[in-house]
Image (cartoon, rainbow over all chains, first blue to last red; front, side, top):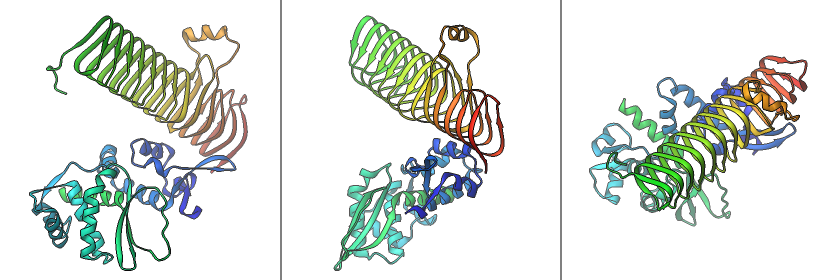
Amino acid sequence: MSDDLISKKELLELTGISYGQLYRWKRKNLIPEEWFIRKSTFTGQETFFPREKILARIEKIKDMKDDLSLDQLADMFSPNPMETTLNKEEVLKRNIVSKIALEFYVSHEGERDLFTFEHILHAYILEKLLQTGEMSLEEGTILLEVLGTHYEKFRGKSCDLILLRKMGISTFILLSNPSEIYFDTGAKVVARLNVTSCIEELKIKISESEG
Amino acid sequence: MKKGRARHLVMNGSGISSGGNFDKVRIRGDGTVNGELHCLELKVFGSADLNGKVSTSSFEIFGQGYIGEDIVTEKMKIFGEADIRGNVSVKQFKLIGSTEIHGKLVGGDIRVNGETTVEGDCEADLFRLKGVVHIGGMLNAEKVEIHLHFGDSRISEIGGESIQVRRGKFGVFKLLNLFQNHAAELLVDNIEGDEVYLEYTRAKVVRGNRVTIGPGCDIELVEYKNEFVQNEKAKVAESRKL
């Protein structure tokens, strides 16, 4: 696993940010606490980060920090839902979720005038999995059911969604993150999705189309 | 909370309340609140035992306070002593006296004269302290200014943009120091900042862009980017330019 991690020193060198910036962003919750991984090395304790996640995050912060305040950025990265509600036309017009996915969502969850962030999120995850072709429409029904009944338990927390298939039977798992999970060899993990990063993508999508 | 509509809670002498929503809360003497307390203004003259969560815009203690759970407030002033069992989230924090916080302290402006203990992490935009400090977790602040007085301070890690640790020299504190043969020092594992100035500090690792190691320091390793100055009365086992 060690090649997936990046030391703090290397990170600062690579990205050109300073200690002050790193600590400021941590303080403002732009970088989640759980990414700070402590390990003992010969110089004592050192901090490491998940390489890909932290590099992507710092790129994003650097890109957006001129347009948005740190607090706005923190909202964007937090797993908390946005306070937005949109109606159906807006969702479609702004290209947040495609018509097919939205129709499917509505046909299962019922027609509604206003979509809260969570409704849109569910539809967005649905679309994501449908688009990659990893999930069939039938499985989409199960997905919406799982998200509808259980997702609220993870609200404000980081979680993963796993689509598992074995002998033609599929099942969805919602898993708090970070945690480890192992399956028998007959089971196949068809898709694994980090819901927090979906939320992040969706927030960016919504706020970009606003401007 | 609707302003103006809520009642006031006033305790004179000795009293017990079960908490609730209030406009202003005044405790003069000795008061106990069992349950959550939400109010706009909370003042304690004397002693208070608050056994539930406290959320208020302004929180002042003159005397002594025990708070059993978390505190969320904009302004907090303690003249005296406070024992806080939960986390504290505050914009402006001012302490003259001594405080023990068992959870985290998250704030904008933290100014302390006296002694403070935080068992968890401490986060702030400005952390200015004169006296003694113990932080079990990490101190993460934009600007850290510590003036060491009286006894030894202990912080496990410090991170921020500008970090200054000096031995206090001023006023009454110096007079008191004369009576103590024990000199104040700071003990830290790691210090990381853009600008670091240290006096009378023992640390394993100090990293920064510009690092100044002043008198009385004992540092195992200094890693610096631009500049490194070492006082002749400082001990640095190893220094590396990155």
